Image 1: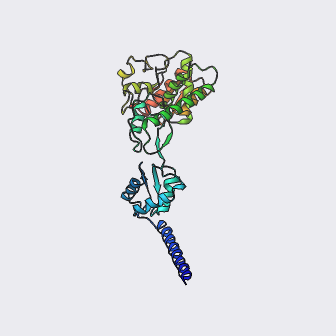
Image 2: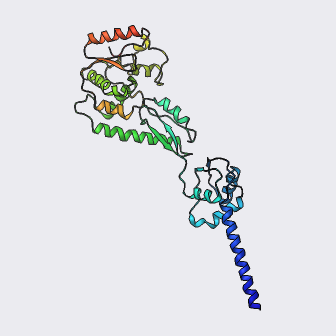
Image 3: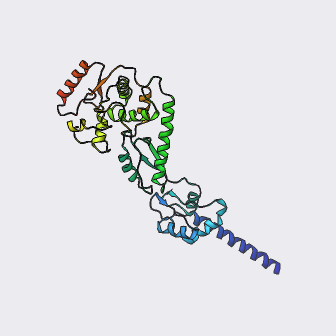
Length: 327
């Protein structure tokens, strides 16, 4: 008889345990309180702090159950601190899986082609998920492209990546340059590419614009590139909301290529990889002159007479246009 009661008790306990396990599993899979999918910044700290923070963010409703589940499943891996994306009504099981295996949310910042250092500093200052001061950026030192980063990444780290990207691509471009270029170093190529970048709004024109300036360098002519004077007149901002004045075009400064021969002492923006390639692989052309055509492009000429006619035509179309370049 006693044996019979003992067996009955074991059966009842087993059934109770089974019901308890079933209830536990069901509870862990129940929909959570998060109304809609969103990214949540998961901070560093112990499980107790984590549970309290996630509850405060509206992700979980039962911090004690979350802590128990995290402890019971700790063999599945550590819980990571990061900005993570959670689906709407994520269960505790889902939350734990995301904390252990999901990749952090990826943010992006785009450094557009042809931006000056000052403009790039402004772009990075607006990268809200990044941290820390931007600091001073050397003109032409970063490669224009889109960079991904995680929440909390230092802005200085993004700059370091962009600088390394420029160093790498510039070295590769220079190593594969065409023979006979009137450029002494990769820095010369960078400087000229920055001028080409700001000179034309049409990417397909870059090799032709580069050819004009390289031809002028070969002949010892002044570059007479308006973008260098704009850079000087704008204090490095790179843009003006008005035409250049005669005073600015006559200013005695190394960046004024109407007054100084050769390349300016430094870049005037961060050029694209395409502009770098245009400089080291220019178009096959003997043109020495170019003037804006009113569409963002240029009319190219070899001789002064043809160039003068192009300038006269442009001035007739736009009498208040900036000084023709080069002439």
